[in-house]
Length: 468
Image (cartoon, rainbow, N blue to C red; front, side):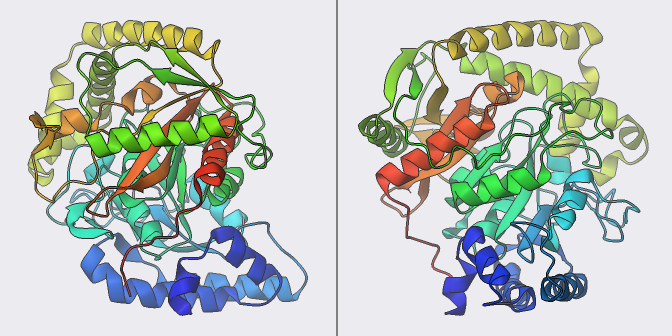
C-alpha cells in the first residue's frame, strides 16, 4: 500500500490530505523513508531536508486542523533542483565552487511553492551549473527504469525523484531542453512554460535569455497544478512576464476536437530511433482519432536553432562566470570549464549575429503558429542512453551524443514558446518514449489541454519503475 501511495497522483494525495484521510506528516515520512532507501542507488538528491520537511508538514497539518488550506498543493511533498536558492539550505548547483553556499533568501519559485503549501523535501542533482555535464563530486543520477542509464540533461535529479516515487512533483530549469529531456527519459510529464511565465529570480543562470523554470509531475493535471502555484509576474525578474498567469487547469477537460496540430516535415539532417518515431506517429494518430486535425508544416532548420542556442547560452554563461573562471577554473569539471572558456572566446559581434538569426527563427515560428494551434514532434531522437556514453547509434548511424540529444528541444528555448514532454509508450527494452507538444506564446493551457487529450485518447500509463 505504501508503494502505491508513493506513486499516486499529486491531485489524489492532495485531495486525501484535504479530506483528512491522510496527513502531510505521513506522506512526508513516506517520501523520506523512500529517499533514505533509494537515493544511495539513484543519486537524485544532493541535500535532503528531513527535519525541516517534517516541521513544515506538521505546521501544514495544524493549519488544516484550524480550517485553513493554502491550496491544491497543501501538504504535498515536492523536490527542487539545486540551482534554485533556498534560505538556510545549501545550494550547490552541483559544483565545487558553491559546495558550501547557504543563501539567505529563497528563489521566487521556492517561495511560491512554500506559499502554496508544498513541503520541500530537498535539493536535487543536476549537471554542474545546469550546463553541459556531471561534476565528479556529485556523480550521475541513475534512471529509475534502468539504473545503467542516465536521466538525460541537467534536470536529471528532479525528474528522477518524481519518476521513482521520491516526490509528487518537482521543479527544474530548461535552457536547451533540460526539463523536457529528463521527463522523456524518465517517463513523466515535464513542461517548459512560456519564457518569463515562471520567475528566474534566485535561480543561478545558465543562459539568461534562454532559461526557463518548469514543473515535473506524473500526470498532466499535476503539472498544471504546480504551474499555477509558481507562475506569474515577479518584480525581481526583470525579464519576466507582466501578464497575470492564466489558470493552467482551465482547459484540461477539453478534447482534441477542433485543435489543429502542425506536424513538421522531416528535415534532411534528421535521424530518429525507429521505435521513437513509431511511438510519436501513433500518438498523432490517437490525437487525430480524438478529433484533432493534422497539418504538415515546414520549420526552420533544427540544427540552426541548436547552433544559435549554444552560441547564446555559452556566451551568457561565460559572462556570468567570468570571475570564477579567472580565480577558480580548476574547480570546474573539464566539460563545463571548456564550455565556459568557449563562450568567453565568442565575440560581441558573434553574440549579436546569433540574436539576429534568433529573431528570424522567432518570426518563422510565429508564421507557422498562425496556421496551427500546436506543433507536435519528438522530444529526443532516442530513449535514455547508457551512463558514460559519448556517442549514440540512431537507425544504424553513429552520432556525437550531445549533438543528437539537442535536436528537437532548442527551437522552443530560442523562441520562448511553451512546450511539454508527455510519455507515449515504451520501447522493447522497457525504456520510456515521449512526444513533445509546443504552442503559441502564453497559451500554456492549450499545450497542456492537448497533452491531456492525448493521454485520454491513448490511455493513462499504468507501468512504473520496478523499485521497492
